Amino acid sequence: MSEALTAKTITMAGHRGDDVEAYLAVPDDEAGSRGSVVVIHHMPGYDSSTKEIVRKFAANGYAALMPNLYYRDAPGANPDDAAATARAKGGVPDERLVGDVAGAADHLRAHPGSNGKVGVIGYCSGGRQSFLAACRLQLDAAVDCYGAFIVNAPPEGMPLKAGPIIDLAKDLSCPLLGLFGADDKFPTTEETAELSKALDEAGKEHEFHTYEGAGHAFFSVNRVAYRPEAANDGWQKIWDFYGRYLAS
Image 1 (cartoon, rainbow, N blue to C red):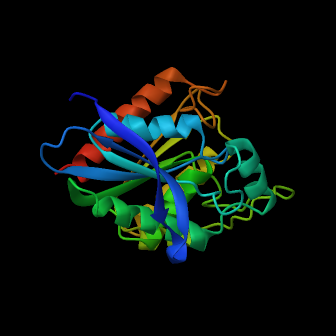
Image 2: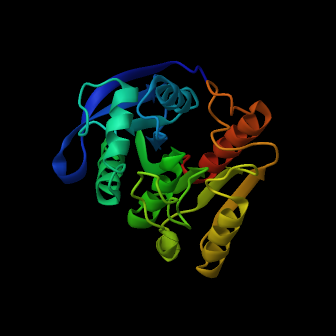
């Protein structure tokens, strides 16, 4: 694999046909067809660190697209200000999120070289949203990286308006990979165990991994929460998982 890629900002059709800013990265290698990944950014927003993740997928052979979920709330604002504006509004409404992911998936399926298979991955709030999208849409693989508030509602005083969605477990459309930290408070290990039980009862294919000594945001290389051993193992599990379900 050459790891050569092309990355750029585009405009895609999101929820209800809205024009939404998005970041697209595709491998330059045109041989054969490839799977695709919709990347859902974390609550800090559509920033340089999550764009780097989009490029990482392209370097590993996938077309990847990340919609700017806060674009409508603060078009043209820097990531920190846009994230603050979105948080003040209670976060991204679930219906709008699903519509934006659907638009991103459609864009990737229509992209030259696509094999028609699309996965989704999300971090932090995006982990919850990855699970939500995989339950509401027909996708081929989903990854939840420490997504909170799937099982329980946010604590009192938190501005995020995100109700529990564990009841959607029965609607999961594809295999789910969950990567969590044992020291995380959102979600706790008890919550991830409850979600796994609900998926077992619904007969849904999933695999969850919890890393000792890791808390929330252990994939984030630019934060003190970064845990290299857990992140490196998590990335290998992502490559193995997507290799099974998204490869041609």
